[in-house]
Image 1 (tube, helix red, strand yellow):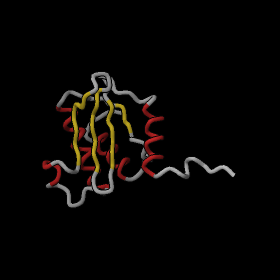
Image 2 (tube, rainbow, N blue to C red):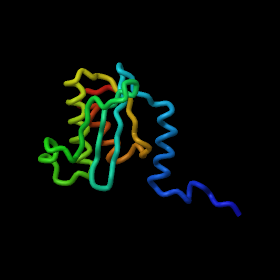
Image 3 (cartoon, one colour):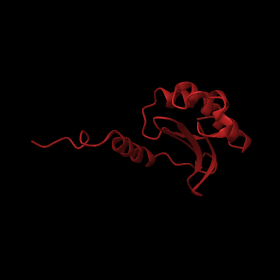
Image 4 (cartoon, one colour):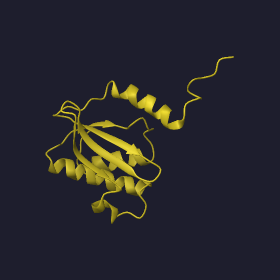
Length: 126
């Protein structure tokens, strides 16, 4: 009896497979860069990336000193909302109005959803 290859993958390896599949379609351009989300067990990170130039334009995370003072814990939805607002403010200051959202292979739920909602409320369009 053959085993299911997905069941033998670790949770992170499965996420990376999904992320690589999504990345075939989601590409950041200079006009519309990619808002990429990464979440670990302890923190959450967001970057606005221009894939054509291959560089990060703006970043924010729950590890930054500027946002750390607002947070008690970096791994909850409240922290994700602060990071979403922060990344949107920094992107707008850099002249970025529209982005393509890259959920990083995570389900659009919980911290990822909270970050996206906060970024939309702060003025980013995606």
